[in-house]
View (cartoon, rainbow, N blue to C red):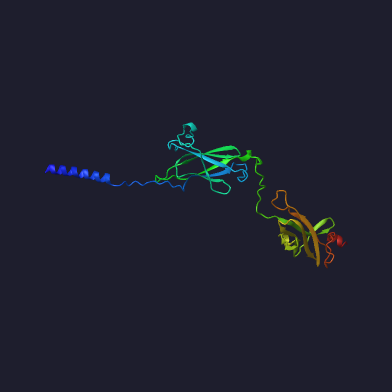
Length: 289
């Protein structure tokens, strides 16, 4: 009985091995994806410089080296060219936009990419590490930036043009209007119902600035309007006009507010002309005994 069991076990083991060897492999066959770039490179001018890719096109080449040792940091693994293993064939990158500032390098191939961008005879180097994805088949695309300095190109300024001041968005009034009448060497504010203005053939209403005592003698006419502005108001059934010129400020952002005196008079008024008179005398002087 024991011999039968031993022989049967041996036969079962041999049959299992034969079945396993004859069964097809379950490993997934990796087919390279030529449509997936290994590296997508963006080329841009270095900080503080200008570069016109149309006038001074850039050429991008690359070499694929063995992958970086995962135990080493990126900085420590900057191996010299002579220590890098093959292949080191120089290949040309593919431009993918009109200005050729975006390029694709390789297709579904892991490795360490040594990138060279050439503009006006000057070379700029960069690196990109491309690793295999979690599926174990395809490379994960690496997105890389490379800055170039095109100041060596003919006609390229050393610095970009001054973009000008940083302007705030708060509009400035064009004219600050003070409606007043002159009495001797003094200006006395006059409360008026309305101030309007004309600019480039268009009319607009000025806005009253709140003042003490509810007197509306100070107005703001227009906002960010340049050139001649004609101010108008009515007082004592008579229209008064004053023309001012508003210019843009030195910073180029806003207008320089003009402070204008819109003079009125009381010639047509039924009330007193407002000429100052001395105060009444004290009672003992007004009625002497």
